[in-house]
Image (tube, helix red, strand yellow):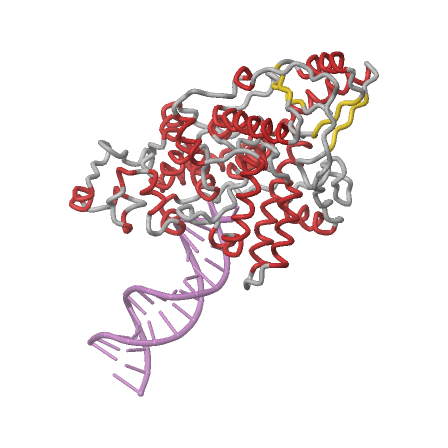
Length: 450
DNA sequence: TGAAATGTTGGGGCG
DNA sequence: ACGCCCCAACATTTC
């Protein structure tokens, strides 16, 4: 068996994702070496690379883990076509999802477009197969094919930010297992409540590991189920199920992307094609840099920049702010997230942004608009999250931490805050922004009727 | 996996 | 003691 990774230039990860992939491959190389095997690295057009490796080694079959995103699918098809023509056996298996998106259908035989029926349907299916522990030997070929150096694949960045992100994460399979065990031991029992408080570590933080396949959804599913049986803490069933529900949201997003690959660019609800966004590079830039003047939004955007990750509650708030308060196209936000997240995942990201923007198949209605002050008070009531990511506001009392512009001048002065000097005043008034968003939404709806 | 606007109820102050 | 008003507190509707 020849483990092989191909860096195909058609797949273009953002900076943090590329960094993660590089670290992940290094870790995978080590674990193959420990098993007296190797991980061969190549770069180039995947079908050509595979044909060359088959020629070099006389391999009889090529097996790979299937991915369902549009770019990868296209590559897989090309590989399959080229190799089968050459008489090579091809086999793809699904290790990234719990179920095969080609077979999950509702009673009408069409894909599910609403989450709850999808969830109920999944629960009615046979449980996904338990992962198999491999204890066997990896049989080495008589001659190993040539491998490129990991550094030459372009994933290893010398940029300064990688050092900072590196301190937050431990990519690789070992890290993934440790993170899951820690989550099940310490946090899953409080998941339903804890997951919404960004200052706490209440979420699983598994997203990048799941994205890169360092842990599979089936592993997470079965470990969690076992834990729910063994853990005697009250309420563990409810909170464990809330967590599994998130795993199935991921599943749903991947199935949706499989069935609607064009949703990466286009809104699923076609009336949104006519929505009047107010494209403004200045506003987009302020949002990206965490300079909107709304502390909970800015804290999230700065956490993203500093660590390659943002707490999910804050992702929703920040996304809502960009799309509704600033009326910027959701595609701009989605693109920024893909560039800056370590867990950048086309399916989850596309689904999430369409959900927030209200143009997804099963989305939040457009008139559901987050108020960043209320959300801040509700989920970061002490302001600890804001203080961690916006040091300029660290001395503002909790009463005003989510709306510093409302603080009396002496409070601001003693906290060392000068609005528009060391922290921006709000770039838009939320009440006015909300009204403007609703107006744009109504104009779109009227236009549809014409 | 909202929030704001609007409606309803009931207790207490007060003439 | 009674009725009126005010306004929390909660419920419902609307966006």
